[in-house]
Image (cartoon, rainbow, N blue to C red; front, side, top):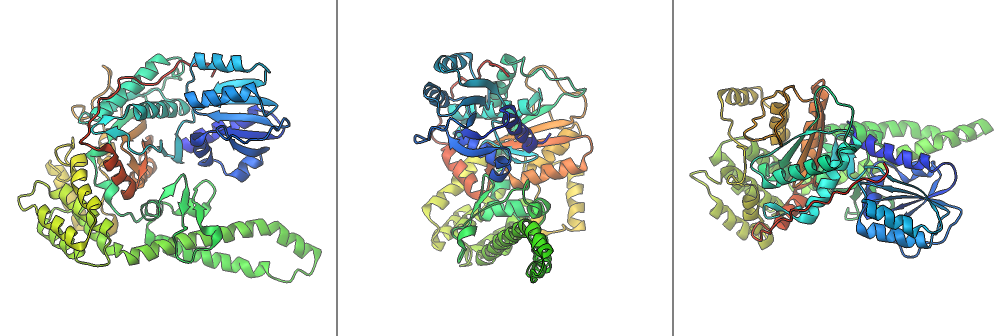
Length: 570
């Protein structure tokens, strides 16, 4: 189960099916992002695709020597754009691919508009999600719920994205959902509705053990997205922000023009692929090795070019050398900026206290440490508010809870009202009253012993003690111990065997720390394949925007409709 490979295969097939000759790729805003995650422009250029255009662009030229490959979401807006396009075609022939199920009536409208008979093909290719890592996908939806209920538009989009994912991986799963979340149950029902309605599309070869879709809600673990991260990919997202593999470095002091925006993609960057899950200390030494390796290769390239053979060797090696030079300067810049921010914001100290708040149960020590850091002028208002959020999520019902005093400390530190209000919003979003599970205290003797032994052995790294709640959930699921009373099946049937193919989806967004958990479980659990998805991949900043967007005070009635349409040709 590899989501990057699944989307890449669809795009390769579109290009192959259009045959030889020069082509234009016509996309919409969302499919542009979907394609850019799995293919670089230079890779697609090698397949005779010389032009990339948006369907909504008004000033496209007429180019009858080009074939058009259209890859679009099946929205009303896109269908209208296509109808206009087909009435006055700019290209010689059109191969149309929708990223999800398209209704028969829309296909009929397109056929009626195609008076010049330029359409060679209309198909559904279910690449309707962002493939982030081989085992991680996102729908890039920020603010999916209003209060505790779905925003109807986002419910429809999420249902489409999740059913497309299942179709692209060729899975017809049994569904389990988090009982404490109304939104999880609602999404489970909507996905089931589509599977029932489009049963012909979901008729895959039966496996001995059916795949399992587990739908969870971010509210159950608001701790994970609030923590600073120390593995490369997660840390880059936390401190710099990753948007469809792109990192904006324009605010970095003294940045050169060509490094203002860089792309980090494991598909095309060997150093990143090998280091994305390693911790920051290891990255530092690996960057040093990369630099030394580069330096060794450099002088050879600058030797005198005395013979034709020398020149030929130089020209042959130059692209590789240039690529390596780009990789080195990119990662040195990124790691340099991470180091600067860690030191400027005192993040080693901040993170140590965050980990204590997330993993230990010593209230007086935690309170003392939070108070100490709130007095530190190097701690930003963002990090100060985050520490108070973590404190209150853990100790909101503790007999000595000191939230009023900490709120006063935030005010005295000059923390803006926006961040102070977010403290109560986070509790409203993911506090004890909302959670279906206990994030902090292991209840049975075995769990307590395990925690004690872990404490004795010492943790390899004080900054990465925390394990997301998802780890425990998946561990129980794999061992057949996940309680049906908390995570019921949708419908009468249950899974008797240990699950093999598991798709986990988190409403309200997943994190790179959870993606690392899934990566490690895939590596260490033979016979089990897990893919993780979310409405978004969060860092702390976007998670707090998610909390704000939910509003939690302005509850809205949820629409009972879900967009699902019968299939045209596949």
